[in-house]
Image (cartoon, rainbow, N blue to C red; front, side, top):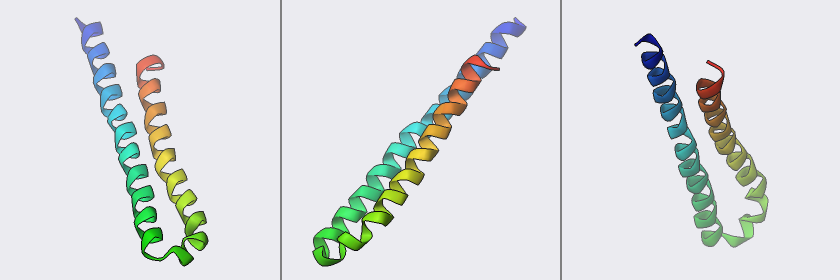
Length: 78
């Protein structure tokens, strides 16, 4: 019985950590969508904002990768 509860906790924690991966995808979409909206409003300033776009995408993806790593650690290392 104790092993079943521990496995349930591992799977539940990994599932909750996996939600962060989906939320990171929403963050990437938000960053890219806002960049596109700004670029369509002012095309001459779009070239100077590409570095900011890539930094925002990298931060959002890093959170997703960290969440995925935590889910894997909960599944297989704990």
